[in-house]
Image 1 (tube, one colour):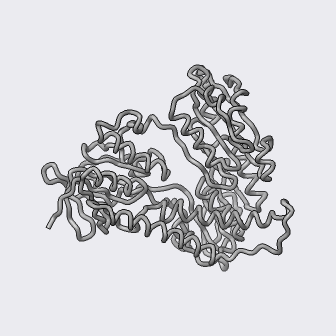
Image 2 (spheres, one colour):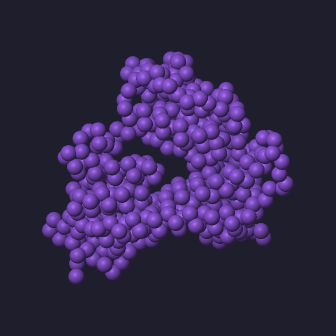
Length: 469
C-alpha cells in the first residue's frame, strides 16, 4: 500500500527535524525519510562530536599552560579512549533526544531508508525509501554533503580517513597527516595535536584558510606552529604509498612525509546522486548541488532544497535558517518581521572553531578593499586582542577585531572577531546587521565591563575611511 503525505522530507539534517515538527503542528502529515542516523552530519559527524572533542583538547592545552596562571601540575597526559568515549556519549545522547522529540510529535512518521524520487503520479511526487513507497504533495530535500577525496596516484593502496573515519578512531594516531588547510583540516589538526599526536598539514593553497584575510591566515599559522603543528603550503602530492609505519606522501618537489594516519579534508560533495532527480526534472549544477531560488524552491514547483545541498552555505545554522525561510514563505500571515523570506538577504555568517575561534560575518577586509576600489565609501576600525583588557586578564591575547561599515548608509557590512569568544561575539554583530540599523546606535549601547564585546562601541568611534588602492 502506498501512503500519501502532505509533505515528504528527504534527509534529516539540521533543517529537517524542526521543519517536520512545525509542519505537523500546522496540521500536515509529514514523512521524514532518513537512510542513516537522524541528525545528519551535525549531530553524528560534525558539530556535536567535534566540539565535544575540542573541549577535551582545550582542557589538555590549558592544563599544560597551568604554570602561566600560577597553578602547578604534574605531567599532563591524555586518555584518548576516554576522550573519544565522552564524545560518543554526547552524540548518542543528542541523537536519542532528537529521535524522542520526533517520535512524540503527532503527524510525523520517521521512515528508514535512502530516499529517492520515482517520478510523478498526477500532481503527487512518488518516492521510495528502502522497501517503502509513498507519495507527497510537497518535498523538501535536506540530504547535505559528504567528504570529497581528490584523485591521488596510489591512494587505492593505502588506508586513508575522512572526517567520519577520523572520529571513529580508537587509538591516538602517532603522526596524523592532514591534506587540506581549510576549516575542517585546521580544526582537526589542532585538536589532535593537543590530544598528543604529531600533526602535519599539507595545504595546496599559498596560505591556510584562504577565504580569510591574509593577516588572519598568518596568525592562524603562527598559532599552529607554536603548538608544534607542521604546515606545508603550496604543496602538491605526486603520489602516496604504503610504508612500514603507515603511509608516505611524495610531493612533486621531491620531498616526502611519512605518517601513521592520513586524513583528507579537501572539501565536500553533494549527496544528490542517489535521489533520482531526473525522474522529476530537478536541476543541479556541475558539482551535483541542487539549484534553488532565493525562497529555496527548485526549478520544479513543490520541491525545495535546504541546507548544504543547495550550495548557499555549508553550515548547520544556514540549514536551520533555511527551514525558517520556507516556513515564512508558506505562511501568508508570517509578515516580514517573522523571518527573512529571501536567502540572498542574509549575510554569510560562520565561525571556525580553532582555539582561539574565528567569527566572521559579511565582508572581509579584502572584500571591503575591492568595494573601495570601485568607489564605494567604506569605513574600517580594528583592534588587536592584545590591547583588550579582558583578553590580557584571561591570558589569551591572540587575534583581532575588525569592523566594516558602509560610509553612506552607516550599516555594518562585515566583521571579523578572531580571538577569545570570537564565535560568540560575532552573533552580536550578525544579529545587529539583521536590523539594518546605523552603527551609531551600537555606539550608544551600555556594555558590561570587563568583557571583550564591551570594546565594540569604543571601536566604532575609531572608524576610518578605507582608501582605494
